[in-house]
Image (cartoon, rainbow, N blue to C red; front, side):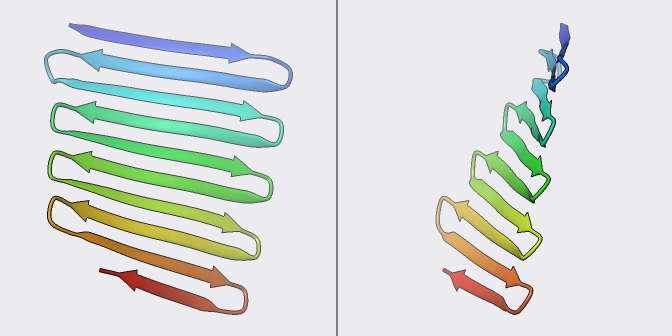
Length: 119
């Protein structure tokens, strides 16, 4: 059984798109949500299986780019958060398992670069 849906709405100011694919045989759901407005674009990509979930969230504006990548499994959770502007780049990487939590924070500016580790 396969269920595919594409929904698209366009106005003079914006464009909304939702793509959804779900199957029972391969046990996954795939969704893309995209919203475009005159100044920015928002995108969410989500893939879910019986064992894991992958999510990418992306926000683009004329001034900056925000990205969140998340991978969740039954054993662990990986996250990458990235913020980019003309002046700086801020990144957080987080790895969480049933036993431990690791975090790396990176801050880059036009003048300097800082990296912080948490274990």
